[in-house]
Length: 424
Ligand code: FES
Image (cartoon, rainbow, N blue to C red; front, side, top):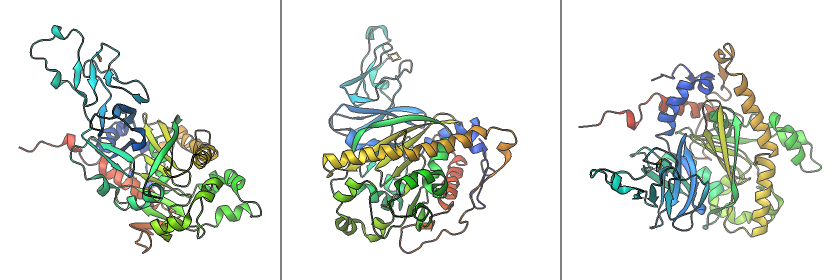
């Protein structure tokens, strides 16, 4: 086991670049950060009838998420119990069984092995009941977001989210009908460690003025000076207890950026439901991360997962969410707006990916890798401000980043459930 205490100085705001490059740390991350944490799997709108399925990853483990005959959404390791091939190689769809294309073992929606070619060739001790798919032991949802964990006895999902749920609701709870997915799931790969993206969405508003300057000037309303729009913003940053984070500017006049969404939105109803502070703050064009690798942008309706693919690579999977009550033309406007800004070729997404790949590209250098990174902005500024739940800091601050890595350090230094001695 590697003790990472010397790599993360969350109290002093320093980070060793080995956390982005070291292969041994990465393997420890898979078993101590990803295996025990609640991980985003899918949206409930992706499952309407028994047999609907979606395949994804938990860390690097492939999983199938499906609705069983009792209409319960369950998740299984997508690996055949015979010789280990994936039993489902489609991205999504509907099926009655998952049949392995290698030798033909077949599993039902409850993960039971129900068909074995040449069954008579196996010894009498062979029981199909012993060879079902490995099930993800805990699956739970929060306002349409489905999470799973390999930890058989985790803290409940709502407890894990804590105050983060209040911020999430700014995107998910506009009306009682909740949200739906529009369009497909966009997937693309980036050279860069997954934490570069996750921590930025949790904490980094500092990059916005510089990295996105040209994009912001493009979007600046006519008659206003771009620099005023870009620089002079107030806001807050939420610092979650479990590594979560959210940053948001505060706009006294609430707004959605897409005109069709703005015109359709009943702001008075939103204020009555969510409260003025939430509509003027977390509902604005902020971004946030639910630790470890689920992030979202409320105004864009973008939710995404940063799947780890080795220390140097990530795969980004992104959905567009809209309110279920939105009419089709408004849904389509929001979908296109999200694609223009944070789709694979979106004007903001391109800026971000360039930065993460740039940092990663040079971090393996022998000298480079020994020079610590700075997370000291707003050091000591976290406090309960009386307006927003939990501890918050300034909008331009690294506070949630320090919280992200403090939680990462705690998990990395703590044996997970699968490493602990069984109690007798
Ligand atoms: Fe699946 Fe052989 S690996 S049936």
